[in-house]
Length: 110
Length: 113
Image (tube, rainbow over all chains, first blue to last red):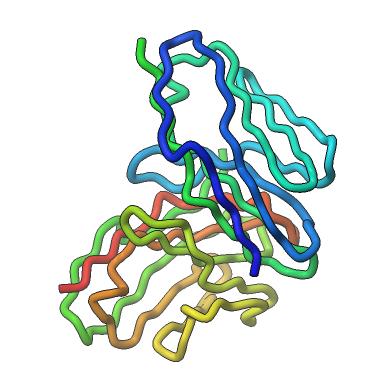
């Protein structure tokens, strides 16, 4: 069964303090790994897709990386507006469904 | 920017009642989905829909659930006889292709009493 585990569950940082969020996964043939951002009471907002180990994607202060077993979302010099829950999801080969992790709730204090 | 819209934003219903949640996907998207998120839990896949038929569904999506695209713009999720455990946020999503770059709506919160 495909599984996604994210750590930590919650992370509190000071503005400007860089850190990384982890997503460990097991999947029967990875088609893609996805990062989403979710604000309270809202739907997930697409950030990145990664398809193969070694791939990296960047967007503003965020950078996502992928290995054969995990993905990291690096946040550099975060701002308070980066506070949200970050969700990781995997899609197996031949499947349409995304399997989501529990998410990491990130809080950036000014 | 195109977006997925969902109605209602919040619905309260009595156990055993039928509920219909509505969604307008992004206009040029061909694949449509329903996911749900019980409070404090993971986002869970329910069903995907393409070319006017279900293309994939989860174990959660039993006979109590159905989906329909009644016209060229709407996509609906019907729950025939709601249970307490159906209380959740229901998200509609759409994608241009058979890929995971899903665009989600704001969600419909269903409360079953």
